[in-house]
Image (cartoon, rainbow, N blue to C red; front, side, top):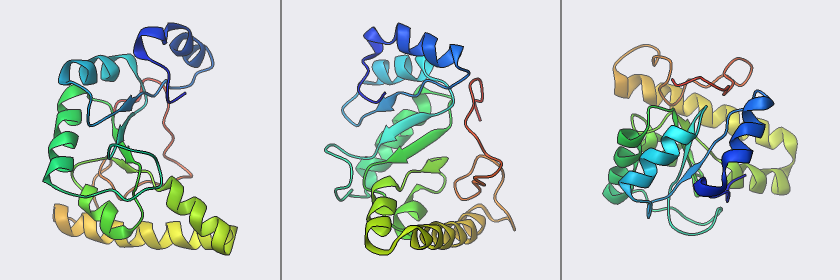
Length: 166
């Protein structure tokens, strides 16, 4: 429920927890540090950092400004940090290595689906994952990145669940 205001979220949070689901809140570049902390405390499972001002699917500028914003998000919450809105390629995801735990490539995956079908989405995700795993390992200096670092998500085993804080 991405546009649920924190001040109006009590019923949403209770319903999610009653259903054994994690309430997730969006963090925005325009959000104050105080509000980032409040959102981080209210949520569970992960915090979803919107990579830029604007709408999903548009181009995101990967810059020191984005890096500083993600550092603010990291300071505000202990939850795993997912980043989305404009993440399209392995290069975009490589920028996030060490800054985020999850890269959300939703709009790009939908574009691939519309253009080439479901098999192409599987191939796109597999290629993206392979490229990122190798890059993350090189950046971290290990044969395999430790759990929690971007590039080691296994859809069959890694599930965001209530109470999981990295």
